[in-house]
Length: 255
Image (cartoon, rainbow, N blue to C red; front, side, top):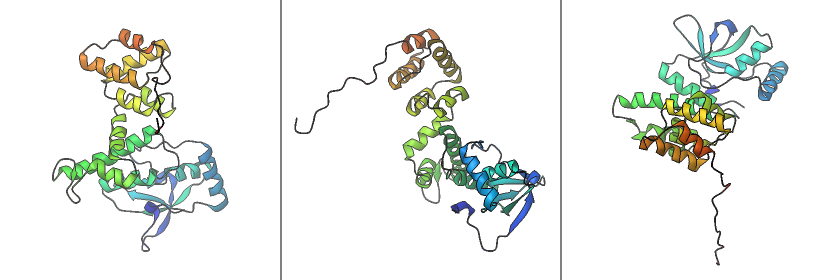
């Protein structure tokens, strides 16, 4: 299956380039992992070779920056390839960032942190472009940056904003979202805390072996707003007996 970003102009040529001349995209937010998907990719490359060339752009320093194909490069390296097929595209920094993000967002599995930082990179570029005319609005379409991302990536504008907020989390809390020991909406609430207060929450979680539920996360945020923030108060909060669900009465329509 050829991704939209990998479709090429008939005039574009595929050339072979030494792997050592390739560099990962600067601040690439997507992790390249030796997981089961990587194993499948390696098996496929063993059998058929690299079917889709990597997309790269030349850099003045003499190397090529990968726009699309970080996983293909890694797989080829593991298989002791010295060269890979690439298409060389000349792009300015901003267009390269958007192409890199869009190509990688089509991956089958993306962790919340990868998506958050990918959206942030795209958001910053769109804001920069729009900022030359008027704040946060794309002057060509009149749409806000979050709306543009929403339309192109499939999440609602509100959800895009939540992902952007997630980038304010300290790495240790973000890791808990990725490994699913902390819920996404809870993490979004905690992302409103200062870095210092997030570390305090982390310490409290470690000492009580507890993770806040949504209502506790909202109350923790309120402690910061009211200036009553302390590890002792957080620990007290986390030690409460949690109800799995707030007791609810469910009525059928006829009732």
